[in-house]
Length: 331
Image 1 (spheres, rainbow, N blue to C red):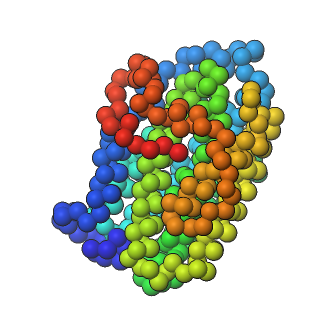
Image 2: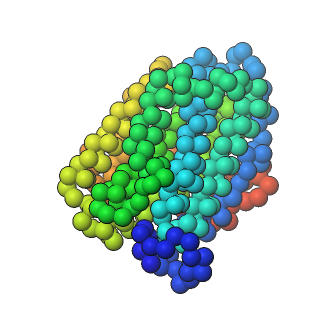
Image 3: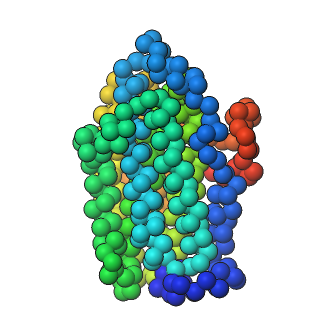
């Protein structure tokens, strides 16, 4: 049974599993189960209420990242449930999508938890996708390149429709989850390294670990569709995807400057932009596209901060430990 364009409703054919990588991603997701209430926010509340701990730049950075992620997670969940699940027909891949949809709900709940705990204005946070141009432009960009697959009459049959579906997958897995999320991750984890807003930092670490799995699954789906439909992966189509990805990088750089214009202690917005280029190189290579930037990683600590084998004290405040998280690779 191919991964697209096969029977969509047969519940009896998950065994034998044709795509073992999908099963492995599902098991890794289950092993990384968490809920936001496991993370204490007491120190965050104290620091947020203090007039001396956080600078205006740091407060802006926190609010803008909560504003972007609060709506971006909903956009991603809508895409999974309303588009990808309908057209991705391999049962083991659908099983993983159900797991991912649950994780997106957890992420959405995380931002509710953060807003409620800090006493933030929900109208301000949840309307930033309309009031902050650099956030609005990122959301609009992804919505535009994935518009076709939300048409109730859309089908993946035929070369051009398969390409449209691949554009959707690149839009949400590579661009939204693999590029648009990562400057924000770096900003919040940079604060955590300074012992500021550590609770939010831990929440973002959990989300980043989930997103690493989402990205890996999405890239495996893209590569499988490529292998099963080699004619769709023309030079022209590859160039089209690279153009979209490069445009996404520019939007993320603009967001990085807007969210953190003055930088943090020892970190400046130029470095956030370099980090975006660095992780984009990894995304391009992962799906067989030509690298564009040749940028080195300015934040080697990003990998260390999410490496479970090195953070032994990370679990001391947790109710439930990860089971196999140390086997995962983080970006």
